[in-house]
Length: 265
Image (tube, rainbow, N blue to C red; front, side):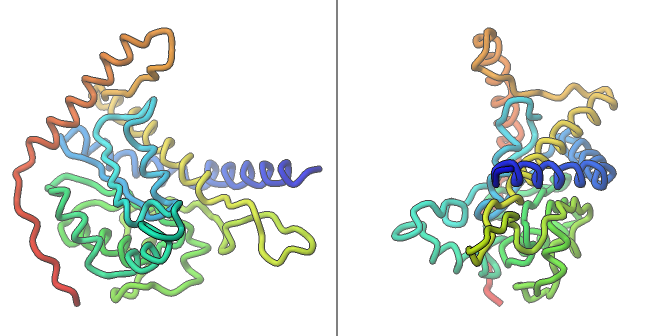
């Protein structure tokens, strides 16, 4: 057996566990998303660092439903430079600063009926918890994709003292252990082969597909993104342009209000 085989076996086991234990939570999350999309709102998706990959997969993506809206803040999403501009030092600082998450949301003109999906393996950092608190204060629904085994073992880095799974309306537990990386090699101190990203991305697609099913069951036809790299390229572009126009309509119809200044506590 190779370490690659061991790694794939571990990811499959973890994904199977999510399938077997989180179906009800995913369906509950999908009902919230369907309520929002059918109600002409937007389901925002966000994660910092690698958590942002799952948020980006929500839309626009082949098979995805129009109405999901990823939020990407480059300063806490791109760490590939490591040094220099948008490096890890800035990331480490910014995603632990209270007030930043609420400032991000104010720039997106959140309105009644919107919902929020937060992807965070640890669920303890200030930006994520800022956003969760802001939605909850406005009476809006929050869906968490997080690791309860990890989060329950570490302290919150927010003045609220809570972890994401303690705030969200729906919690989808990835079950990823504290280490995240799953493969231990003799002679090497730290494990390799992270698993949280693979599971979070799969959950994002499961929520998306379940939302489509929930909408169809209600008699609402969701607008779906189509693969343009196929034998139906022209049709796919035509459909996807309609999806983008629909997203623009939902954004355009929001009543603009100047973002209020955020007062640092």
